[in-house]
Image (cartoon, rainbow, N blue to C red):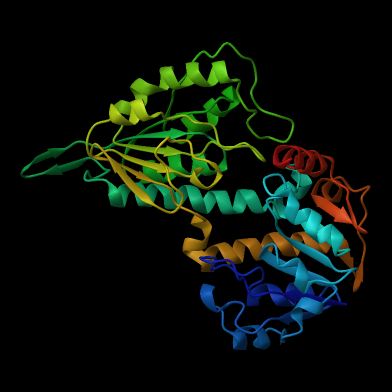
Length: 376
């Protein structure tokens, strides 16, 4: 059996699904590894490095029985009976899954790997979010006119910057840890009350707002979406904290939905000149009213950054992490060179979105139905 690694074609994508050091681990599964020419160049991995580890550099990689990508490949390149494993944004762009199903491809959406103990090594979202949280703080520190750490100098004392992190998931926690390492005074908020201990363990203050609701975490470990009334109350309560901060990092996203609007125009206009907002949810609608994906916007001296695809900004590191996630997943479906997609396994039941020409994932079916209703 052959496993093919494709060269990414989406603009700005520097990652590759498999790095050379991961090749021997797949060879042990009894498979051949084909890598498209130049697949790893953007992330610093040359064709020769893959060949040195036992892979074949081949233009036929897209014809392999199992195809790996960071982003979903063009369905036109695939054939019936193939398996493709990549990120697919299946809840936000279900039409892409439908196109794979029409080709008779079995699709494994890496974003839908369930967050259970047995699947931790396969969790692409967590791997990428860790890096994104780190990079977001570096962006804020670079854009801010203030230094983050406390400094005692002959010319006087430089007070530390105040950083507010909105959302204490994987990205938020890494942002907290990074801002603290840079010496900032950090506050954080999350609608999931059980994150308080994690936030405080990293040396940040957990800001609490009473929204009149109970636990706001679903069974998959993601934050539930708030009602419109709860969002409005949350925004009012947060305004004072946001406007006192020198930098704000927002991370709040709900799979398959528009990102919640947490920072309104009025709040931004009340922030102090020189403050920075890094909106990590800009690609999915933005937590900040002024965010624009991939752009920098300045409003009354406040800089709003809407970075797109932060993991691609450090393609070498994120490719290594992504590859390890895929190796763990392939170890589940490939045994002694044979491929088995067992939908009785809870990991595959959660991640396989289409099979044998049919969309098999209930949430993707719902998302596609909702999209079609909107379009009609």
